[in-house]
Image 1: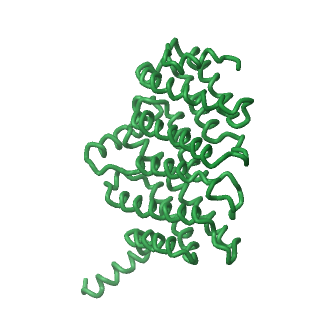
Image 2: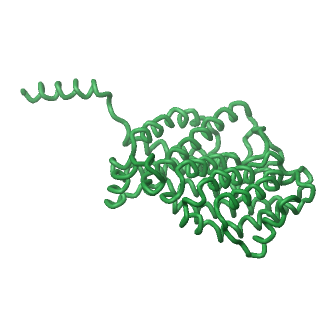
Image 3: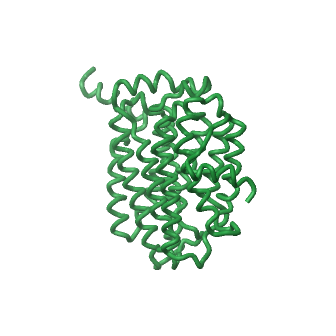
Length: 330
């Protein structure tokens, strides 16, 4: 394959970073076989390239973070590699064994773990556009659980990337918690408005949390809507077990996120976030007809969390205040 030498050296651990142009070229070499994946002429090509990529990233990410100006264009290419590798247009062949499917899914999960450990904690030192792309990938991964568009899949036990979806979702949830510490509060309020001034001014606590929360809410709303629609279409035929498990996990995540948001200092939570939370309510109500006990219990817990968000309209508040003063003779 053309350019093999540029990544075969990485496979042996001998990697030298020569600058932005050389590193971007190296990333280009990785991208083609990883995007082809199962369509590669040799079934082992993309696996070898994936192993080489992990080696390069383990050595290169600390260098790229420390010398950000020398690697400005590399981040865009890296985001593209993540996209092509995790969501290759060339799906797994029907002849792929369960063992090989699980092996390949483990590689996808390994990539998400790398993002969780080596990229997200350093969000303040990375380009904002790159971080938006990463959060979008996690959001997409957490709903991209099946290789089939059918809501009833007789081979769901093999085709569903359950572990991959769970890993993406847990990563989103991990970075969705809003810290209640005063230090984090002051940092978030003091720096989040300076995003345009460069990655160095981005608050890890403020900007990353905002991206994670909005991505998580978007993911939850999509899963809720899709679940209620598919349940109506399925009639008396129950949805596959992984779909029920996915729905239950989403409802539990909504419950956990609401609890976290309500405990956080209100100045740390944007109005837009509360607006997105409230918009989930109609989608939750649509799911109340679910016959699944597993889904019903998780749904009940999520709906109870909305109790603290209920309030009478402002006009009614004024009328109640006036009536109260009249009753007290004031």
